[in-house]
Image (cartoon, rainbow, N blue to C red; front, side, top):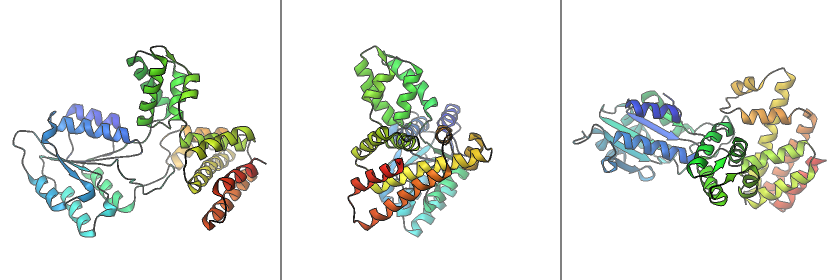
Length: 345
């Protein structure tokens, strides 16, 4: 089965544990929190009773031996395998590992958690999938037990948690300020937690306002790319160049920035085509497997006064820029800035 964090907590509360779990996703802090909650519950609060194996140097024979053990002073034999990348294992190791997962004893709870490598192999976008070999283990874990893919929360969902966190810290925070913080942090739990600590210290028991959030919180890559795309489509040159400065200050590779802007424009192009065909946000979410609606809603808003010809021209300019980047014959910063200026014209 595949569960979200709330479904996992319900399973833990009912103590209906699966034999195998696999935790992964873009929200690393949620992955760590869910892993910790499960291990604590299975081990009855005795962390020393959990056997932890390093997936980066996994001895499959040792795992097989550990999986067959019977617990002496606990209900379950709990084993955690951290950061096991199936792409890095030899074929015989992968086959042996899958055989272990298929035939786990009833007293064994095997937990895979991933925070140290990208299960998706660098793929981005709403339709990204795990790499082929990792997907084999994930699919088997879903069939034999429980899988949790923990992606960042939508701003509206995260806002309630942020308001509660501010209250616990002795501060107040209105919902619009919480939504703004979630948007700037891209819904990443770890980033929001860090920024909330900074904001609460600054507010010192007072109110955390939208202005404070805008002035003190460092924008994230995705949100800045969205801002840049909107400025380009609306021909707001000053806003676009401010976003460019912010992106370049993040020291992200220019080729990645170019691809990110292109991806954002493609989402707007998709929304424009859907709008012209009489389709809705919900239709696009279903057709293209979006988990959250805010990205599609943003694309629909950006497409309202747009033409397919303008978006196509912008994508052509980005394609040419990417080709020049790969030749190594241009100053990357100058090329990126010049391309954005051409898109604004």
